[in-house]
Image 1 (tube, helix red, strand yellow):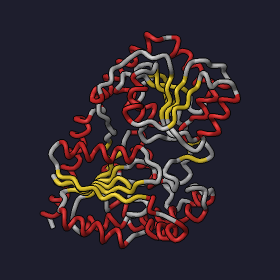
Image 2 (spheres, rainbow, N blue to C red):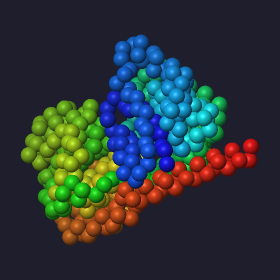
Image 3 (cartoon, rainbow, N blue to C red):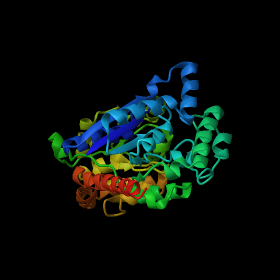
Image 4 (cartoon, helix red, strand yellow):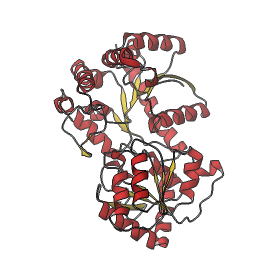
Amino acid sequence: MKVLLLHNRYQYAGGEDSVVQAEKNLLEKKGHQVSLIEVSNDDIVGIEGRINAAFSALYSPVSKRYVSKAIAHFCPDVVHIHNFFPLLSPSVYDACNNANVPVVQTLHNYRLGCPNAMLFRNNTACEDCLGKRIAWSGILHACYRGSHIQSTVVATMLAVHWQRGTWQKSVDAYIALTAFQKEKIVQAGLPREKIYIKPNYIFAPQSLNITRANGEYALFVGRISPEKGILTLLDAYLQNSLRIPLKIAGTGPLLENLQAKIQSAGLDDVITFLGQQDKSAVMRLMCNARFLIFPSIWYETFGLAMIEAFACSLPVLASSWGSMAEIVENNVTGLHFQAGSSTDLANKIRWAYEHPEEMICMGKNARSAYEAYYTSDHNYQQLIAIYQAVIAQKLGRVLTM
């Protein structure tokens, strides 16, 4: 099978970029021919660049021509779009449809139902624009990058293509990462029958020659930003006199302020900021931790760090809503705590640290969950089944024309 991948990288590398590369490698490993068209927001430079990006977000004839030529040259059996925003734009769907090539779209976020793609505002979940054809609330609150102008551009792009039927008709199959995410995007207006559920995957840590050890610290892995719940985590320590060792791996806009705050509180001997770590370092940290803390306060679409923890037989303390509650089974593969509650989180951290045998058992269950749902082989089978379904569907329509 020949697969053309399309992806618009953000300026700051994230989980989406890792997933795109992982799926590309997996398909190639299984013998498929894969071509990746990738653009980057790093190319948006200066005022002129931002203006051009704004027009591109609505509809980019340049991207349409470029993708049309790539399709003519590569002749793919299926086109898999990961992220089109903003430089590729929805025009790439027309390029695929004009060439009569089936289209699969992975929904890594809530972009089609929310201008900031996160269903998140004022440090809490927000569904004000979900299902609305014009995202007035997103414009009013400048939800995209704190800019009324940029929010208007995104809201206009969404409204135009809802009206045009792009999201409803130009994509043959959508991939949601969890059942929770599927329900939210159905609320946004996408056709339920086109949405498949396929989680992300990771390779087992054994491929890095890492083995499990029983560590003495709790671990946080992720972006140091408000939506990730890092403030809830640190308040759990600051307000509840926790002295349980905590390692924090990651970087982000809150890093320097939080480092200063922890040092001022005299907790720098308890809480260690490690900065950005590469994948092998993260896996080693996980294999030597007592448990992972995943305190996000937004509707995470997936949360790859949780699956990485599962692969390392590491139980997870997770917020009790959205996809997190779906992935982590309470008292089986980890513990739930009330999202945003530093007191409840502190209580769960204490309990987890004081009950090592129970947490080891949950870690074993977590590894079993990884083997059942999140391995590369399981992911490959699901992905190929989706590709085969849309190819057969497209062929059926051609034969009946």
